[in-house]
Length: 196
Image 1 (cartoon, one colour):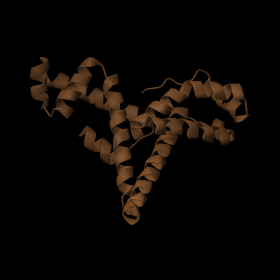
Image 2 (cartoon, helix red, strand yellow; image 1 turned 60 degrees about the horizontal axis):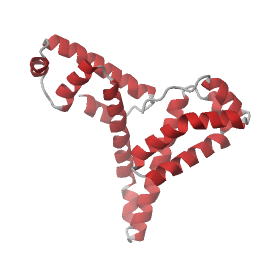
Image 3 (cartoon, one colour; image 1 turned 90 degrees about the horizontal axis):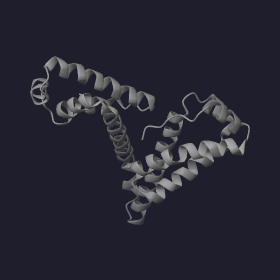
């Protein structure tokens, strides 16, 4: 789900801020598939993903005057998707609990939903980062972190030295951390759990 910035994005954002409809449609055309895809991964619902696309671009248009202040639009729009997905999932959960007569218990489960959404999003971002790794780094990461092999065992399986495994792991973890930073998601507890 990695996304290339729009050509001349700062210029387009400035034009959208001035009310330029053509610039807004360029922005929409470039980001709407990303917003839909990320929203779909978080909510696991086509209808809710479509609702997220509609709501986010409506918010962007309404608050367009602030667009020139945004340094990293991809991180900004990713945060909007996450917040919108959380709002939708929370509303659905509360509605379901109220409809079944469990309204008071629903309020206590909101933090559980937030943790689940953070976890889902972290897993999505981690998988994206792993898929972007070069073959050797990805193989080392999968063997050591996902299958739990020691560096020595991974080295034997890959027919390389343990030092080379260590080197590939160091590079892989650096790339994964940078991927999370670029996307402006730093969940220290989850990241430390997934990367340890």
